[in-house]
Image (tube, rainbow, N blue to C red):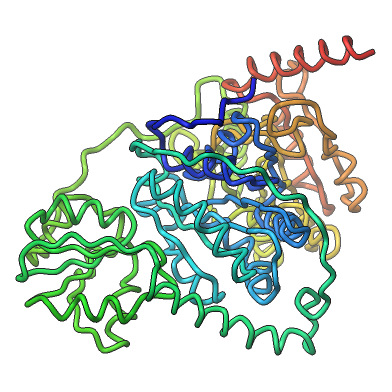
Length: 539
């Protein structure tokens, strides 16, 4: 049932839900992304609100689809977590040179403190490096408002816009007063070869156009960009952005505060004029001291946090320490329950076998990464999505034969679709002398981020039926010498023996170990039952 959008009431929303609602109200034609905490709920909510949403195999693919939507003159929302923007960086940098007719917003959901990530990179660097405007909301209302603003800026200057969220903004609930929705404009392709075909002859002038656009956006930010001032005493002025602004206001209510939403390009002269009023000006920012460096480069004298506070999330207590200059050792956080594979998880059998065979395991990103922990202790590397296969190949190429034969690459089904296909091609094309073994742990879902679909499940984002990638056929088509599908529920299969046999051969091998995630299995049965019923009704 469609939501009543004629007169949207005030709502209590997370930042993710606010972005989804704004995208719906702003007439977004398509929401595309790859699931990753803390961004996942944006597209799930967009779909629940009857927006058109889909999961892509990876972030690069999603952004390229979004660019196509924007070239068609329609609005597109592309979502990913911070490390996903690394995957999408190739089209990102060139898309900045092109002219998009429809609004294109790229959400980067950063994860300071690494609540569910392998690093805590600060994606504000991408705005400067790629030359793209960046908006940073402090709460759900701004997440909603800045989604609208991002589309408006994107269409005014024909440029993609980065919307940077962080974990606390994504998941915290604050009130949102929505606008009345608009009717999406009809898509219509406008041919413009010099602005969209980035061969060197066109890209060189396009780079000049990009710098002109950024200068104009900077001038707009100086004149009317989103900026919030709370005047207190003149002893201390605090400059902050994003969630840090909320912490700073609570930590020092007596101080004067300045925060702004368009954080690249900066409203330097507005900041300069404001900063002259105070005896002391302090920048409170989460992550790298980017804002401090840029303000100091512009000749604005500001204080920064010490190196200790560069790491992990800020909160009110930490901001108070920054304000008072307290750089003493922080109390150790309380010990929580260590993460572990679920009881009954299909991955457990695999990791037991790998440990008993004393394998050198090149691992990957997913819930199976927990195989590194006791009682398995059966993972030796984990770098990024898809790196298990290629890192394993590197180990095989370099190690003495006795060690090389122990190397196994372990990757999940969603991760394989995301970034493992090229690794498999590399294995077939440049096989090590001892061969290599890749094991796909196929639990028929993207389990780590909340059981989302992917091309290997045969279901779309809304769980309706879709084409399903056949991992066995893919491995065979790529030229892998030995491909085997194992149903882990089968009682007559000796998984340990199968692995040992593959390790003894001088050939490339792919084993797909399939058993549904224990948490997702009941839902999968329901999806299949619903799909079967729908098929019978239409036949």
